[in-house]
Amino acid sequence: MSESVSKSDDVCQNRQTGGLASAALCICPEKLDTPSGHLPYILTPPRKVKWESLAVPALSLISANSMKRVSFFLLFFWLGVVTEPTMAQSLIAPGAEVVKLADGFGFTEGPTANSKGDVYFVDDPNCKIHVWSVSEKKCSIFVHESAHANGMYFDKNDHLFVCEGGTGSIVRYTPDGTRTVIANKFGARSFNKPNDLWIDPKGGIYFTDPQYGNDFRIVQGGEHVYYILPDHSKVIRVIEVSGQDGDFKKPNGIIGTPDGKFLYVADINGKMVYRYNIQPDGTLTDKHPFAPVAVDGMTIDEKGNIYLTDMGKGDLGIYNPKGEEIERIGVPERPANVCFGGKDFKTLFITARTGFYAVEMNVNGAK
Image (cartoon, rainbow, N blue to C red; front, side, top):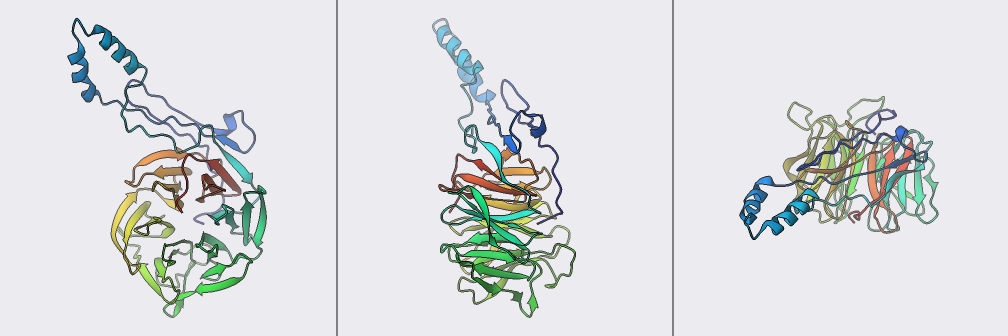
């Protein structure tokens, strides 16, 4: 959680197309004739024409015997058929809408899916962990007293690992609800308020440890990032945050690639997402600016695209592995976190203030 509950402004996103024409698309939920809680998402991928690459071939066709060929060429050109071959297909399923599945929560966060695709998420102020059943299409309570749980992640055995902000701990829940503390201190001092986590292919746990809420004591002397070894025998600090100008300021969301090679960490106060190379011992090297965005939560799909909850624009931004923005998703409330789930892991679930949302995708989530 990065701020108090507040409804976002209307989402209006301009999409510009290059070449022969350009158009602006603005989606304002309250102005659309749609069912309550439904936000149609409409996107036309930008089409770009490389004029310099077409000029010489076009001129070379002009001759007495080629006028018919030129006419067909111009016809197809004006229809927009001759476009840059790298034109991207939308990641959103055709005709899909952002749909509200449940509401009435204090502040939703920490979505993560088990092997069946059921999605677990927290209601932080009310100290509850809820689960959305894919088969039953309804919510139930998994943990009634979660000690202000926040970020969560499932391991390969369907054990739920949780950032427990109220106790400053990383804990594990078995499917039957049995709770075990995995780590609650670094050195002789307890953690600040663990916020978000990701489990690597070896079973090691990366987590961010900022401080939020009314108690702003920085117990660890800083807001850092840690790694718990796969056997849970030791905790190491992998990102030392100084908070100085030009350096990492406040870690928040975190996600890694399924192959365990890269880790993405959000600096919410520095308005930047960084990418790191993961070393065999769990340490991080080669800090690289990935996307200049103030981000709370994030997830990744099978193609390596990163989904970022944009605190500035109040929507979701999707970035390819190069750090280029490729698409945006409007949400009726300002999103806090996001994950893939559903029976085929092609549904994107979004926690957004008092609501819990979903949208069908053209791509699977990374596993």
